[in-house]
Length: 246
Figure: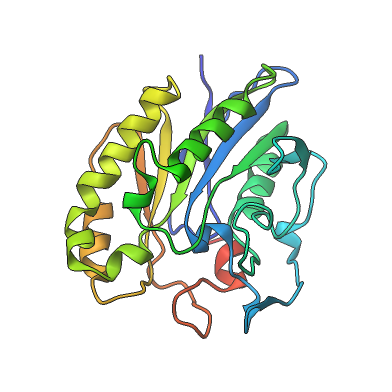
């Protein structure tokens, strides 16, 4: 029987139910997908990370990350530095989330960073390079039999606010992404934790947010980042917003 507990995520504004049952010696694995606010831009100023790591994001021997070379290593900030390459990565939500999971339940957490900044949901469609990499890394994360994928944590949509046609198509495209991912990972009930964006690159933020909040699929939880503090660029969450506990 799967046990469940409520985890308060750092930039989430209410409690989510996260599957946390873990076999002896196994890893609870969470896929981290989306664009720059998942990859992390907290502490990035003028294209350079300031190197400040808050206590909530400190490394923990019980928290591992799947590297770009598909090896489990101890997770540390910036978590996406070898995934979202060519960009300045800073503090994101992944390590703060994992530290809270470990604090609440113990055990070992495995994070699978997959986020890439500046990407539209259309770029994550089945068969695309980004989609194939996410699926491949997810499959590799359980290849050794030492863990189970518990959830996809997804923070994306800011780039879909630029063109109205992308904003209008967001709900349909996101639903297809979820259904295809569940099918390809053979996890029909995979928990998907989706963040409703707090900002955007264009003027169609409300349309994308409405689409995100309106997705009604089983085991899909949408949480709202609206109101959290942004960097001076008015697009990316601050370090505080990425790790503060509500």
